[in-house]
Image (cartoon, rainbow, N blue to C red; front, side, top):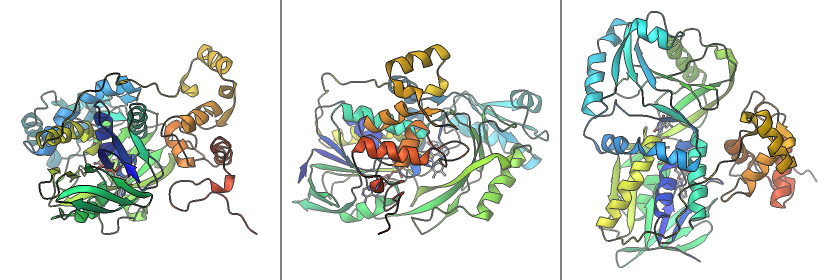
Length: 478
Ligand SMILES: Cc1cc2nc3c(=O)[nH]c(=O)nc-3n(C[C@H](O)[C@H](O)[C@H](O)COP(=O)(O)OP(=O)(O)OC[C@H]3O[C@@H](n4cnc5c(N)ncnc54)[C@H](O)[C@@H]3O)c2cc1C
């Protein structure tokens, strides 16, 4: 039996931001997730933009939270050593119909309080972004839109939260909640029972199932699939800004995104589904992405694709951010409707949720000695020659390259495993230090990463998994 004051369900961007924010106070906090790693579900497979969200409906909770949240990333990323690409975004109109929508986009940005979004002419846009469709008629420039390494955003906050006392229980699914006299008291999980005073439901796609356990589910959550391509770093036709499509009512359309790590991300689709496990890419979906992305940047080399993936947005019906501090099931806090802007909104959601919990009676006292900063793993591939010499002198494992595509060394992999809330699977290593993220997608380094994991964790190689579930990498034939 575990005991805590506040149990956060879901180790995605939202759950981890809440846990890290709570770790500033003298209160016991535990995070559980059914997956083997922190990073979430939608959070690790999204477009990874931390943006000004100037196209949201003005005045909504989503818009207010995102406007508060976006500026918080500048300090957080400095404190926790998370790379943020200050690239800005361009929304080009490539035909007359789109061009006529520009005044309403600018008005919406203004109504959202995003006053630095401005019109740019065809000539200006082509100077800023020479690979844009030469048919462009004009467009919108938003200087504060950024791209983030979404894996490190969550891992860094989780490491820092753990350093400040938050406990983590992974591979742990919430299966039931018990109330005593109308108050949350016990949570049943696949790893045993947890006694708690509060439960914060940040379970994304699983949100409605958990809300149903306390009778607070008058809505549904279904997946809205997004399919993406990742292009290799040395693809010849690149962009230096995030390129956005003119938004449609149900989707922001396709994006072309320059990532902090140098790849180009292209996508996503927006397909409503029922199956919460459907992560298959489809020929039609990927063709749609390619067709619409080429309307923005016709010269894109889609043949430089190194991988494709799917992300599932947790779409709520009725839609919209909803943060509930329950009166019916006291101690239950539900965060739903965080569908398409939750990476950007996560820091603001954490502040807002905790304030609502305080207003409902939670007493919080600041913790003395809270550690606000964390250092990331030093990236050998980005180090200068002198830095490389110094790194190898301090730790000879920096002299052993494991992933050739991304130049990732054994030292970085070992650190990823040994850190708080460390990697336990091959994909968890990949997300932290990029071993397996390059052109060969782990074909070369995968077996070595597996051996290092087994050695560091003191288990047989057959016990090492690619990710959660039964994804064992080796099969033992008798
Ligand atoms: C295609 C796509 C593009 C997007 N682009 C952007 C963008 O550019 N910018 C932006 O700001 N946002 C974007 N988003 C939205 C953003 O990714 C989400 O809003 C955000 O990640 C939601 O975070 P979360 O922590 O609530 O959910 P998740 O990351 O889904 O995490 C929920 C966690 O809860 C766990 N869980 C579920 N049920 C249980 C259970 N019963 N027990 C234990 N654990 C459980 C899951 O395993 C999961 O880890 C995009 C999303 C997608 C899919």
